Every structure is written in C-alpha cells, then in structure tokens.
Length: 99
Image 1 (tube, rainbow, N blue to C red):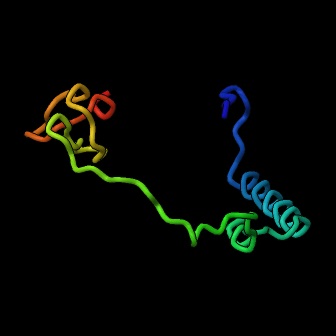
Image 2: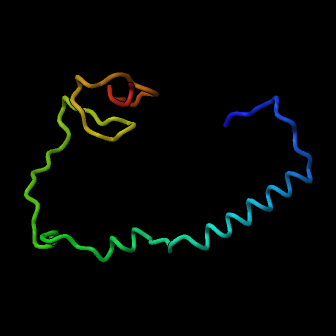
C-alpha cells in the first residue's frame, strides 16, 4: 500500500471516528452477505459414477531395491545410481532434491 507522506496527518480523534465508521459499514456488509458453504461437506456427499474400486485387485509386481539403485534420504524414492548427486552426512541425495 502506497503512503502519501505529504498528506496532512490525522489526529487520534479523527482516526477513531474513521474506524468506527468503517466498523459500522463492515457490520452492514456482513449482514447482507450470503451464508458460507463448506466445500468439504458438499464434496463428501457427491459420488462419481464408477468410482467404486472396492472390488478391484492390484496386480503389480514389487521388486526389491537393485544393486545399482539407492534410496534418496530426502524424498525417500528409489533412483538409479546415475541420479546420485551427493552424499550429505553419509546419506545419498538424488539430483532432484539437490537442485
């Protein structure tokens, strides 16, 4: 917010009068506003068609970490050794986290 240093300064009485007027106008504005709707409550009752995945099974084969891979100590993702940027305190850090 820009400040005009050349403008005459207001006294304490004028400032309190202005603030009372502002408070009164805010109170009138609030009473005329509509009721706030909580979006999370609205979204809980809404269900997408075909979104029920309770009968689905995952068929993904999980492999253990390979000899040429490492786990980043910051993002905890498994990366190939070519993405090793540095070691901090003896712990590996990937190139994405080091950037």
